[in-house]
Length: 73
Image (cartoon, rainbow, N blue to C red; front, side, top):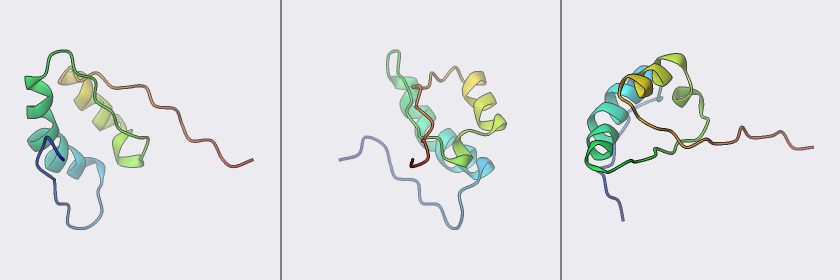
């Protein structure tokens, strides 16, 4: 079950495509209708770049703190 439409990405997901193809058209409208939501994403490279963090700050999107993966010891 999904509460939002799926975002189909042709090719490699980069920071610009993440904002223009996933966050702005799919995630943000859904987040806006919820009361006090927290958005969860892992630490994949397109999600943690400065421009994506700036987008979250500008749109007042609260992120769930997610631990950085540790290398196998």
